[in-house]
Amino acid sequence: MDQEDRIALFLDYENLALGARDHLGGAAFDLRPIADALAERGRVVVRRAYADWSYFDEDRRMLTRSHVELIEIPQRMGASRKNAADIKMAVDAIELAFERDYISTFVIGTGDSDFTPLVHKLRELNKRVIGVGVEKSTSALLPPACDEFLYYDRLEGVEIPPARERRARPARGAQQLEREPEAPAAEEPARDVDSLAVLVAQTVAGLQGSSGGEVTASTLKRTLRRKDPTFSESDYGFRTFGELLRHLAGRNVVELGEGPAKGDPEVTLPEHGDREAAFALLRSVVVQDLAGAGGTAALSGLKNQLRRARPDFSEKKLGYRGFLQFCRGAAAAGAVDLRWSDEADDYLLSVPG
Image (cartoon, rainbow, N blue to C red; front, side, top):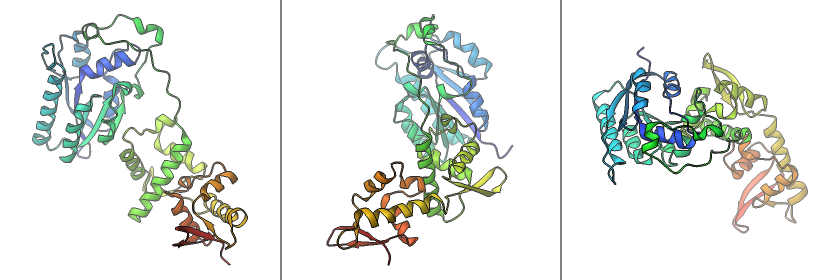
């Protein structure tokens, strides 16, 4: 019990409800998928939703059944209408952060970039912040500010009606807060697993270089989330992060070993195989294609020559942040010699012996 994260949930309800209606084929907002996702992350001890509830009368029962405290924000039509709930929600969240030390995680349900300063302040107070928003109505500024961001439309249990149901009778709130309808978005294509392999290899290499210690699966996933708070292995078709790592291990992108805890394996980069083949390719290109009169090849343009010989070449798949670092790795392995030339104003590569 003491090890559980205590979570406070704050919902900018108008933003979420209208975002779901406008961008998810007229679907009604449902709290249950969010509640299920948060149950996997800790114990929710505070649930608050902010809106002028006269616009969302039919939604009150759903939220009340989920034990959500409804904060009434009467709205005056005009320029000040939009910000009333935003300000109240931000003040309450900061107040709770100071008064309840045991709350470790704040969940901010909105896609509005106006909440970005609130997210920054909560993180300054050593609170973990999870954002939740409808993807098409979420500002690009908000997800990178959070520790983790969950797109509502990607959560398990969210049902998006077919396009033909788009003209279904809207809820009362949708009638009074009418917006310009938009065509349903096309289904998002599956994310590229190859680009993920590059990201994972690069991240493992960075962690090995910075920490000097073992890199566990849990550490790797936390780091991937810091790089991209919207990261989720399910977007790539995997049920768990362990399943994703086993897939990458089968492709020789990473190697898995016994970790400090069961279910948390150590992740390393392969020491042989593809890396040695890439070093051999570099050596052959230097020897056959680029060796000039002086028996050297300039670093500039060398990567293009490698890609002509092997179109799928990428140093990032091997865990190197850049091509120069890859060449230095090849030099350290004895495949090539690498030196800086003031005369050429470039690095020069040659074959040892």
